[in-house]
Image 1 (tube, one colour):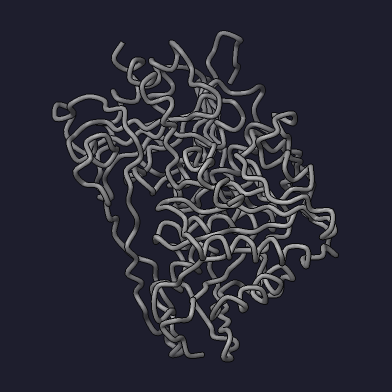
Image 2 (cartoon, each protein chain N blue to C red; image 1 turned 135 degrees about the vertical axis):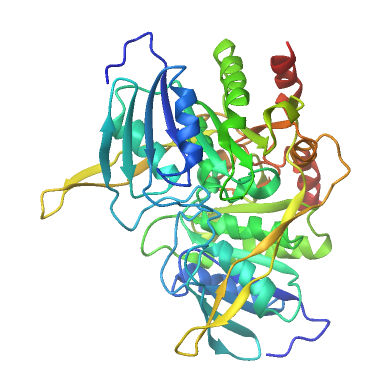
Length: 260
Length: 260
């Protein structure tokens, strides 16, 4: 693959692995916009958050190359993949880091656990315009085609004007048919938490083990300016995400607490 | 261990493992404030961010119990540990989740990768008053005793008035002698990034692999209201951290972008 200076270079990853339908749907749309380098794992690495691999060596393999894209398999986390690609594999800094399409919502606090969104945050830390896309469906037969036009619109908007420093986008798409989508809603992360329901089992040796399960609890179902509300009402939810986790609004109060 | 209704119940974890000197220093101070339940891994799980274990079963073992504390070993991430303790192991919701003392700084964007701070964020998502402590030293002979008085002050402050919903503290302590510490500085997360320098090697079979290495790059060394500045100037850096990653200041601009 040759990359001319007029080509947009787009780095694509996900946390559902190279065989995920969401990745294929994403990179086919990305090829409309430029040259695409895909890096991901053979198996899924969901729920990896922004984890780094520091105790075992990282390995990368070039699987496929044609004039439109190059596909690498990596044994690390989504964050490792972005770091490796930017530092070791790409000819130059990419114009975009695009992650997804995640198989399942990354709205509300799910962003904190999401490997898909961590890859977007990692791109953002490099100063690259970065977006994570997710489809709000865990169904094994989820149809990712509904995501194509929303993705095109987001990329077209970003081509006109990139995101400011330290900001990336968390885009969640409702799993409905295309004509049911009511448009875009720019919103904030909903307050919520996961209610865990560990499954406690005994192994054949009689020892206890646990599987993490649970369900999402939306703490503000009536607030209309949140990503959860937008998704539930068939809007594409777009949340600008910052890498700055400071609770700025609480700084002055906290100063009083420590000096009072 | 019996926990009376007047006892404070303190859940302690870290990402450096049960044998880490920082964990011991932390839980000895915590015993001054209440009954302590410690849960961590046998080996370190650094750089795990808020990763969850979803593909392999979780196991927990009670290692030690006396009237002041109970120690569990768990095979999961720091976030798994908090979830398991809160849902399966504790008699009631803890009054505090205290994580650390991390062997190395978690200031600036390191919070995004930190397992120690992820445990504090996880506690915060449960509505528990949560703090992560780190000592700014990677030296194998780092002396964690300097952390004891700063930790006491933080806990005493939080006993007077807990943190607001959705906020936890990231406390980084300079690795100097106690009389060199100039006090507390309430500050914001510094802008910065990690510069990667992967080490590319060949294994005995001639195949390439990589080790992730790198150094932290402070993007605003002159700003005096940041955690990096506080640490460099021998202050204990206290940053209030929010689980809400929305870039609120950018919401209106982004609406124009999508509607314009």
